Length: 171
Length: 171
Image (cartoon, rainbow over the protein chains, first blue to last red):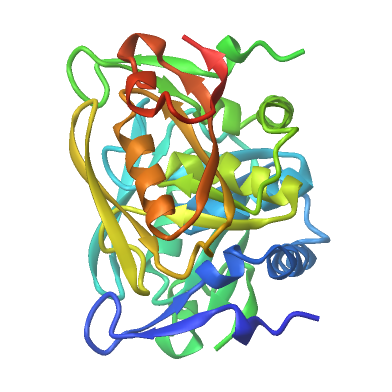
């Protein structure tokens, strides 16, 4: 049984002073730990009907693809501005340390698609909320916000509490 | 049998005038096409002993993780500057449209590790060459440069021809 604390590393003052960053690269670098994380992420959404998995750039790509593979469904990357080459819509949002914009390809989601949104961390909820808006603008239904970790003290749930929010690890 | 041309889309003048961009998002969005790509990528490295898979930000993350899962080995992300929180080394390089820098965590590779480097596209070879240098600086051995696509007309092979370079699709 993997102890996640052995594979998720606290890095002080990253990306800016006063922030403690949860570094998942040791977990990515260990096959056994990765497999357990995937199993735990899948357990969170086991009873749901899901047509698409959306992963948020970039750390949401790792297990986003994994989940989509396990569920045998399409995978859709949400990306920073200027990265997606085809027709996009965008949504701006505030995050823990600054402002940012997310984009999605307009043909990525079909009307009525049941969508699981995955990211590594739920922090202040700004990114997750923007992701929900993008999926809904294209006619998709967000059936779960699925995270490796939730930093509860940042109260992200205040922004996305109307969704099914699940995380493997709660800090 | 999936025809890759149905799932990899040419986008004209992206990211800049005169460039034809190979958009893999339709392939990511189709489970069957994704599975065939994974199978074809694995076939390229079937006879190799591999300890780590390195994926290059961001599009190398998708199938990089997939390959690492199938081989049951560690996965290491190479990232743009300022994204990796722990101690890093970096390497700058010229690419098809501009200049850039790649970073790797210093604890990501152990001396003697046999490393497969994966990215979506081999273009001018600058990114791949920088990735090789980073792996080698940490004492790793690059056993394959593994790509979804090779744009042969950009002559990337001139920069990395001393490695085992393999691609599923050759344009």
